[in-house]
Image (cartoon, rainbow, N blue to C red; front, top):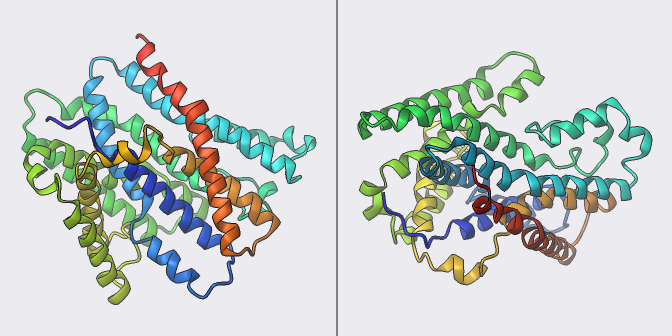
Length: 358
């Protein structure tokens, strides 16, 4: 499969990260404007996290193909992309909470804080403790739940990869395996959200299990494996796919109320996820020069995603009600912190990928 090295994945991730930031901002702050709820739902027309998951399935499978004979390099590359910036963000979050007097020395040496800290530096970022219940919206960085899911995907994919790329395995069989996983994932999602009768803690843990979101990742892998066939329908066709998803969402969510978002495992939600995945990859290969021209080599998406919640929490803790100009200033400060994260931390760490020899 031949892909153009010039694509819009960085720009798409940036749009997705800004969507998540705006959605959370308009969900948490009271801005005293009558259109706040409508704007919040309008922003959700292009949900960011499912876009991230689809891109991960598409690109990470490619990465695993390139490093098929060197899984150590694959795991190191994935760790370099996630953890250094995440650890700097954790230090930044602790600093903000210390300034806001949410953390003191007795708390630092408590069992709860130590367990929370180790959860943040591993892949249990969703873990929270009662001591932080009064900080902002109740979780220092609640949006990091998807990091836990991403890391699980990175760990599970090599197991799937070892079978999917057998030389004697036909494309038809690969598609069948992935579609089977999609069906299992959808039924698991439905069971957890609609039918599970166990404890709330266990339900929350199952809700962050990779199987619940695997069909998002599999959609990206399926598009990658079948790109030769799909190319003529996707490349340069974003002007069709993106409006199609928005129109689909407006009709079946806003008019007929058949689903709230693409996480839902009813027919409308599943169709919405399929269209969104196709629209995402189509946008990556439509006017592929856009990303380089607009971003000029800067990738702010990860920084915006991991920094927006601690910054929102800090300001929300001070003033839950703000006006629109103040919110714009807060968002601009998040973007500036993200740019600093990219220039100082992420960009330099990623250079290590080519220098590490294994």
